[in-house]
Length: 245
Image (tube, rainbow, N blue to C red; front, top):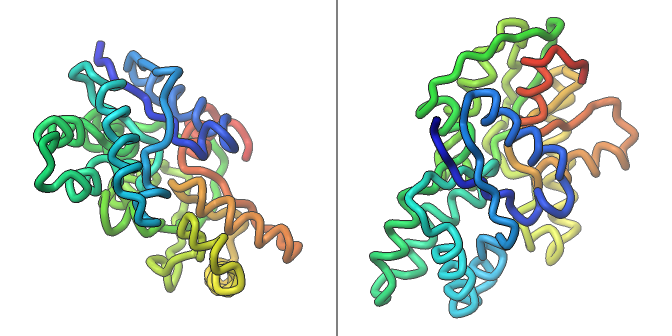
């Protein structure tokens, strides 16, 4: 049986616990033993993006020591996975700990990549026919490059029609601390993304990023729209279990 570490992310632990549990269930359904470190913390992306590099290094080294055995580190977020697998290397360039961090980063993989590319899972779709659309979050698209794997998993579901967005790759306005520092711009970006979603005519928008979903779903709720945002791993588990959305 394969063993992996599971990195829940701050947002997963604080606001999307069900999505974290469903992601773990998907791994266990595919005969993977999941090791969950209870003392896990942030990946350091917020501090890194804000310019606190020394503090970010301390957080990164904590993670390196915590996930110390030679197992894959599976992350249900392209954003955090991108930080740990790619941005850590930039952070520690010319640092004495670079090789240790590089070895750690090489073990980090986003969950859809692990399911699709490593396990090569087959997903039996037990749900009713449905149309959905997909939002690509920026870090998963441009840094972790996990979008292709995520879409591949959706395309394995025989009763799901994936309707593309016209402007799929445009940011939703979340951007971590950006949405706090620039709320008016963030809101305008979210509303532009939602207008694109509305044009598809679907009732569900799926994404692999919790921050984007909170931003998009919160804005849609304030707009009183009958469209639901759902996390990729909630969606996949419900489809294979035949549970209604």
